[in-house]
Image 1 (cartoon, rainbow, N blue to C red):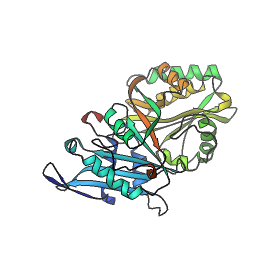
Image 2 (image 1 turned 135 degrees about the horizontal axis):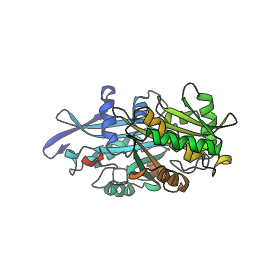
Image 3 (image 1 turned 135 degrees about the vertical axis):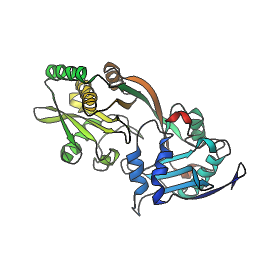
Image 4 (image 1 turned 30 degrees about the vertical axis):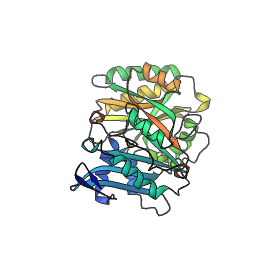
Length: 329
């Protein structure tokens, strides 16, 4: 195709280009999921949906469209379409979406996408494709420089008051405990397509970065809550992926203790800032973030479409599912 007098070639993403693909996909994301993009785009499983197309102009990749099955949530696939700022306005996103549709039209999977909540044109475009907003997650950030001692004091006071100890671990050494605790701690919380109830925790571990730090809130030697966080690649910032408490122990302040410990641990490990996102309906954790001193930042919409069979992804106009903007760094 020709776009603004420059020929555009559509082709599959090559293995050597995965990092470039991750970079592009990250431009429309409000949170760091680079580890998830990398694992899904690299998957060689023959029984999973995996489509990744790029638009190339004069040897330079200027757009990407991908649909990757997500074993972390059974029966779903994540969809994204992103173009670079210099390639916007010429219909390239529509062309990428149409090419993607041709390859996923017969899939029975439920399709999901995440969009920064400062990209209303992207949301309108997704809605024209049949996607519906099911969750809105609020963004939070705290600058950590100079706060390590204050946070340590707050952690010690909260731990003593609650009679709860927090232990640091990881996904490998503490795999059995993580698998047990994540189910109890996630139950009733908002998920990509609904509310978590009972689920197989094995694939959920793929949601977390392999080098994540895990914090267990323990009562009488048993984990009753858990926090998971990771360092954002190539930065001194950290991101909290999960903070949850066993249903039987909620409402006691344990989530607040975990949050403070996450912040303190990150500061101790050299972090300059911590970010996280929380579903706006989860009023308890929203309050915990505020109490911890975190400030609002850009959030994201979680959107769902039951299947590509319900409509034609080539029929929308103008904007791609996720439009990259210069301000998304």
